[in-house]
Length: 54
Figure (cartoon, rainbow, N blue to C red):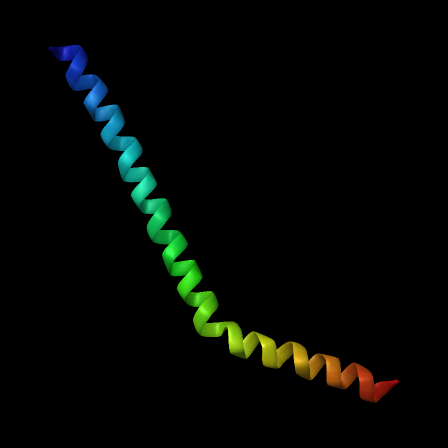
């Protein structure tokens, strides 16, 4: 009986880590989606500056 409780706790810890990783991934994807347009504008500005300087 004690062995089964130990196994369940280890499984529970793994599930908690998986949920944390999934949450972090969702937040990162949301941030990339929200900031994607701004990042694109920055690179377009850099590209234009380089093109104008040559």
